[in-house]
Every structure is written in C-alpha cells, then in structure tokens.
Amino acid sequence: MNYVHGYSARESVRLVDQATTLTELLHGDTVAAAAVVSRENLSNVTLQIADIFALPFPAESFDHIFVCFVLEHLPDPIAALRCLQPILKRGGTITVVEGDHESAYFYPESQLASRTIQCLIDIQAKLGGNSLIGRQVYPLLKNAGYKDVRVSPRMVYVDSSKPGLVEGFTRNTFIAMVEGVREQALALKVMDVTDWDKGIEDLYASAGEDGVFCYTFFKGTAVRE
Amino acid sequence: MNYVHGYSARESVRLVDQATTLTELLHGDTVAAAAVVSRENLSNVTLQIADIFALPFPAESFDHIFVCFVLEHLPDPIAALRCLQPILKRGGTITVVEGDHESAYFYPESQLASRTIQCLIDIQAKLGGNSLIGRQVYPLLKNAGYKDVRVSPRMVYVDSSKPGLVEGFTRNTFIAMVEGVREQALALKVMDVTDWDKGIEDLYASAGEDGVFCYTFFKGTAVRE
Image (cartoon, rainbow over all chains, first blue to last red; front, side):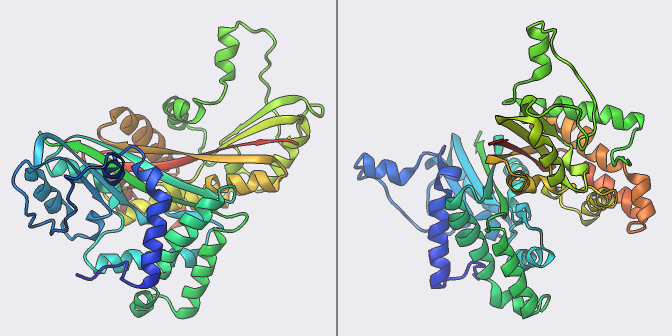
C-alpha cells in the first residue's frame, strides 16, 4: 500500500518528533502500555504486527483496543472498526485518535500556504485515505456499532511563548509533513514550484515571532456491548 | 457604524442564546462582575457605555479590563488595545476574547455550507472588521505593548451526544449568525439563492444525528507593565 508519509529518513525523524511532542497531549490519559511493561518488569506482553482486516486473534481476546493515526489511511474506516469489535471483550473499550488537516489554520494568513496543505489533503485522498477524518470519529464509532461513544478534541495551539511546540509541532511535525509530499504535490500540477516554495515559506512564518499555528486531534472512546 | 450582526429581533434572540451557551466555556475562569455585584449586594458598581477610542476615564483607573467580541469589528484593533493601556493601572491585567470563523468545520462536509460561512467572513471584512481575528490575539496584545501575554483556545466541539450544544451553539448561535446575513450575502452575488439555501440546509446537517460541528474562541490575558 502507498503510504502518504513515505519512508524517507527525514520522514522517520519527523514521525519521532511528532510522537515525542504529542505524547502527553494525546496519550496523557491513556494507560501507556510500554511504560507499564517496563516499570512493572512484565514478561507476558507481546508486540505483534498484523492486518487490521485479517487479525490472528480469537474472539473476545482484548480488554482494550487502541487505534492511533490508522483510520485516516483506510478507504473504509467503518469496516476496520467493525473488524476490531469481535476481538474485543464484551464491556471492553476502544480508543481512537485521529487528526484533521482542515483544522489547521495559522497567522499570518496565506492563500499559498493553505494551498500546500490542500495538496497534502488531496494526495492522501488519492491514496484512498482521508486526512479530514478527525471530525468523524464520533459517527464512525457509533455507526460501527460501539456504545457510549465520547469524543474530545485535543487542540494544539502554538504561539512564540511556547518555543518547544513551535519547534516540535509547527516546524518539525506539521510543516515537515507538508514538505514531505513536495514531489507528489508538484506532480499534481495544481501548484507550480514557485507557488509551492512561497507557500512553504509562508507556513514557516507561522512559526515566527508573531506567528500562531493551530491544529486539532480528536480522541474518541467507546464500549463494546 | 454598520454592525454585521444587525439589530433584528431574531439576531437579539441569537445573541442571548450565544451568551447563555458560552458563559461557562468562555468566562468560567473570569471573575464574573455582575454575579459578584449581585451576590455581595455591592452599591459601588457603575455600568457605562463609551467609545473605545475616546474613553472618559482618567489614567490608571482600572485593575482589569475585559474586552469580549469587540476587536473583530474594528479596522485597527491594535490602536484600540493601545487606547485601553493608559487607563489600566500598572500591573493591571487585560482579558481579550474573540472568535475565528475559519476555525469552523463540520461533518458532513459541504462546499456550499463552507461558502455561506465565507460570505459572512467577507461581509464582516467589507464592514471594516475581521472575523478571523481569534488567532491573532497573541500578536495583537504583544504588539500593543502588553506583557506576559498568554492565550488559550476554547474549542466548542459538538456532536449529537451533546443536545444542549447542538441546540444552543450549532443551531441557535452559529448557523443563526450565518442565516442572519442572508440578504447581505445574496447582494454580494457570489452565491445564488439556490446555492445559499442548500448551503444553509447542509449546515443544519452538522446538527443532525451523525453531525459534528467545531468552532474555537481564543482567550488572551496580559499585563500592563
């Protein structure tokens, strides 16, 4: 499967930056499995990679399922959530975390900068994903048959009084992600190279002294009846 | 001065709905003057209407200044903030609350619905205001000369598990505000009446069973040195 974030070295660095910067915001109220494993010196934990549509687990295997930045890449996210339901115990819970690229806005405003983000949205859509899925976490969980769905937004607000977020989120997570699709974006031929480069430059202005950058993740929890 | 929200009966009802629904979100951590006055049975409180650019108060009159949904209507918001500074005591504080109409996004997505909101943004801009000012609260306060500027976003996230917000915010505050500029919007001739009505209908879908609506206010505080 083609993966919008690619597999380059810079993308790998970016994904680590993103994970580090967002850990507390997104997962501060989630039980952090790896930390528990390490702290409690547990030996009965298995990390395993599998296809969400062909999971090698018996029915009602899990107390909790955690789905983070996955649904955005799938053509049929409801089908994926339905595949997860049988392996969850009755009364078990699921957590879903997704971003929404249209929740990105910034100061100074710039049409060209907005168009670079639109390219990223379009490329992910062409690959069968949906980078605007954050706003849909509530109806997706509900329509996949889960109960007690609760969604809370996690807004990242960044101004220059927060240099850690300027660096870790605005520059090294979000703008780096947009820059990461440069070649694919130019291939779309909706922006020429001059406009693209100016758009990226304008995005960086939102990480400047008077700049502001906003983005929102959505975290949903629900129960299997 | 022309006022984008108008003076009609429906607008008045909408502004009361908005005030009621948002009180806790926006002002829960602000000292509520009227409540204190009433509870403490104070007799030394004066309510007074004046022009922000010609305030009838001596220098260093106030411990705190509270500015809510005002800067969005002014052609020169920094000048207004500068006018307020001399009447604030040294060490006194200012609070600014503003919305940002580009922070509005919703599910189901709809190009026509987005265009009705864009009409509202354009109309307010034509009247000399800026409905995208929320994101600018940090640089505005900083560049007007205030110190220790701190801005926090107040995101309103509404899905059908929150019927009070569906009614009080999505329908009766936000969509009603967009509907309130119908005549001015049609006069812009960027949307015909069929598209406008479909756009409004699509906005109402975000208040439906599977709908989601998001909007963000920005609250800033700062100090006069």
